[in-house]
Image 1: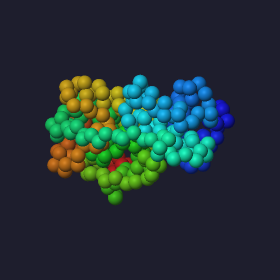
Image 2: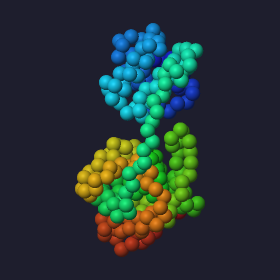
Image 3: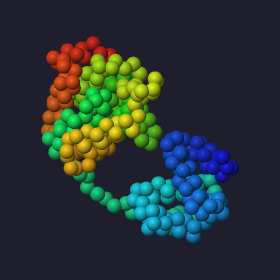
Length: 267
């Protein structure tokens, strides 16, 4: 590890940036240095401008990707290298286009979830939809995060390292109870293949892609797009009424309530 990388890492640590942010910033600065085969310490505004032109015109990266590189370079030069630059001029942020989301109909949502074969994956994706969770938040849920007395789901250290509570509908609670009866998780609500770990984000996204192919819906579908689905109460109501039936088909049980009557999630 070079002294510059060490200093930048320490600067991020004392500011309590997330491990993901630290890794991303270090990677972006490394790519910048390798592009010129020089240390960033001896590179200046002209090289930064040239690099941004390269990312835009040659790499043809989306503005959202370039914004990540901009954030990393701004941190490096402002915080670690203490350059007294006008960052707005030296390292400009590209304007990000505002796009309307592609909306699924209620029939498409139900058809997609019915195409998810694994009950674990289906429950995770339903949770992302019904509670508006990021997939990274859903996979990190613990059994104790489901508060059926207050009817909320506790999100611990979500985006921005913030805790928050989200509303838990009675129907989603039934779905989560049904899942608990299948696997009886004790720590992570959605355990992974490795002992003591939760399911990976990649596994959920892969399951989402496979279900998307099976349901023959032309619109793009990702866990993130499910989270940002418009809050139409009638549609969500129909989904949460139908989703337990999807689970029951696989479980072969008479009712979700009978299956989950004694689960700890209900206590």
